[in-house]
Amino acid sequence: MELKRLRYFIAVAEELHFGRAAARLQMAQPPLSRQIAALEQDLEAQLFDRSRSQIRLTQAGAAFLESARDLIDRQESAYREARLIGQGGAGRLRIAFVGSATHGPLPTLIKSYRSHFPNVDLSLSAMNNAELERALIQQDIDIAVARPRLQGEDLRSVLLIDEPLVLALPDNAALATQKQPIALTSLEAETFVLYPRRPRPSFADDVLRTCEMNGFIPRDQVFAQDYQTAISLVSVGVGLSIVPQSVSRVSRPGVFFRPFSGENPGTQLTMQARLDNRRPQVVNFFDVLRRFVKGGAAATDGPLSL
Image 1 (spheres, rainbow, N blue to C red):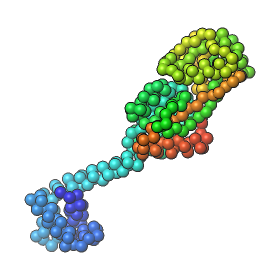
Image 2 (image 1 turned 90 degrees about the horizontal axis):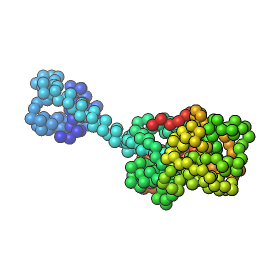
Image 3 (image 1 turned 180 degrees about the vertical axis):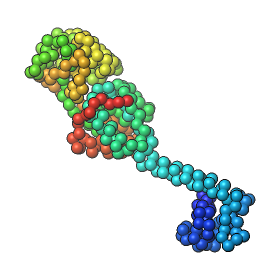
Image 4 (image 1 turned 180 degrees about the horizontal axis):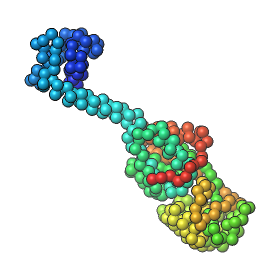
């Protein structure tokens, strides 16, 4: 059964007049009458009582009108949903990020995207760089927020933030209350909490290179698997850590963040996706991302909620 016949039937049923229904449908009356007759033949039921001066719905016609309206509503809803998903305004977008990204500009970026595309289902998860790379290759995620940047010619990349490194110290450390930047070279004998433990190379190697640029390699090294574990170890006095400056914007019990003097190469947070992933949700996200970066937005209200 053609859906257009349902529309013809609904128009006649609501107008109860073939002439007015034809005018509403912007068609001639004879073709409309033939379409209704063909519909009745297909259904093997009379839908209209034409025996009086004004046509009326039969019992079968009244029952069919409700079902016809429901079918048309469902068709229009399906069209709207497919069109919205096809334009990236609905559907699902899978974003994974390194743990330290939750304290930088990422939460504000996510809020901005949600304000533009509120009907998109956002799936957010935390991963380390190796997991991000594997998930992108296997197409288990759409967008990776990596630190440092993932390597690969098949990835598109946009720099989200380039920021300095700072020290994370236990609040009972002698240097924790020092107001002047702490000389990194003076910390050679301290225990450094590094992350992630594996796989390597990783952010831990960036920190070790920073120490090497300042003329030393930490004598004592303790490895944690992620930022949250590392900062917890710092808070209980296991050692100190070097972290992105953005994480210092959120207070952490037992931890003081302090700048350091000496060589500071900083760290970058990069948004990446497969070049062959042209899903409209991904394209729209990168459009929002580029406007976000161009506008210089780099603050955050607080950590990102999963």
